[in-house]
Length: 255
Image (cartoon, rainbow, N blue to C red; front, top):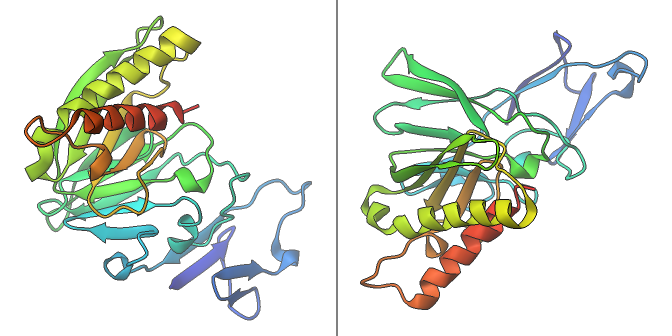
């Protein structure tokens, strides 16, 4: 639901300055800048209900966590946006705020700029992805998650990258193989193509309710638990091989 919309600080009026037809918002062309005018700032404020989103597309709730799936057309289910793969933009400040006890982990694309407590037992985190990307690679996750973590130092530049693989707490013991597979993928890319990872953080989240095998969101991969969790007591050799393969596949999408 659209709550408000403004263009360069001016509130727009429905039926006069813009129209809504289904999921399409159209702004009167005379209000838009020409190439000679330079840029404008369009602000929208929307309200969504992820708990009732059963399509698992856009922002939705899976168990105790909120997460997003924006490929192929999920971002337009979050807000109005030129949601096309050829429209590349830098998401330089994505702020996530939630109840601190219920959702202690707040993740987004790229590197974490800041975080802290706010009034009412809440907290926030701000994430920045410095690289242009289409909206289908946008991702946020919020939840009470457990994790395993490590680091990887890239070659030859020596960038120390923080690696972390998250899941619901009861599945943390099954995350080790995914983490080691990620390290192998990073080294293989360096050895084979000379490609070093280009952010300070690489996060992976295993989600129970996910409509794909995995998703290569920049710096924040989301996986179906079937392709991320492995325990020697229950997983087969094929399970381990499949996880290593999919972890590598999603990592290589970074390029």
